[in-house]
Image 1 (cartoon, rainbow, N blue to C red):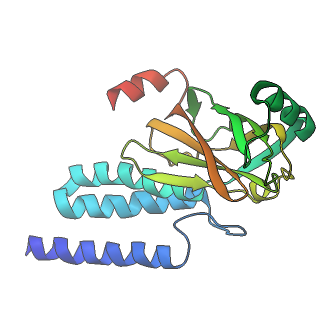
Image 2 (cartoon, rainbow, N blue to C red; image 1 turned 120 degrees about the vertical axis):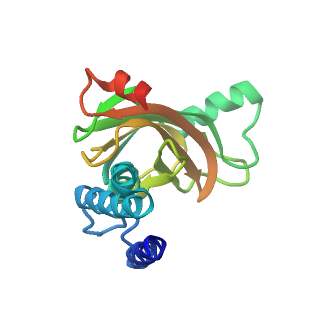
Length: 229
């Protein structure tokens, strides 16, 4: 009887998750009213039910924590700002001085991100990036776009979306200094995460970068909590 109950519960939970994905709630979209905090709570609830069905009270506690990770990372929104610090002519000239001529196609010569090593859930986190992209001899730079992702300890990867990141004005070569600002919801489970970023030139992936980050209840407990997990 218990096995039958577990199977039925799992099927119900799977249906709920599938319905959520079908409605586009699994990942924040432009104009999506999905709340990160509510999503974290829903994830914790689903995870808790699943854990309880499989392993009773202990499973419910572990499942709730895992669910908070999955749900909480699904609906984080960010602000994005971009500033050009050198023009296309400047970086193109520098490249030609070092290589005699421009590459055949646009090339990202430098890309990096910097992020705080630790962050308190519910507090704003700022990630900075630096991009240098030169034009190609046969193709100029028409569009540059960045994407930011969070990867949890289980390898689950979620993109943090922003309308500003799609309309940055980075439509020429040059050197840019950019910033991502987002707030990890309090429902996200504490522990070790990784920020991954991608830069696209003319809609093609050109470079990637990453930085580790720890989310915790408070800065004083961050490292102990992370090591305990």
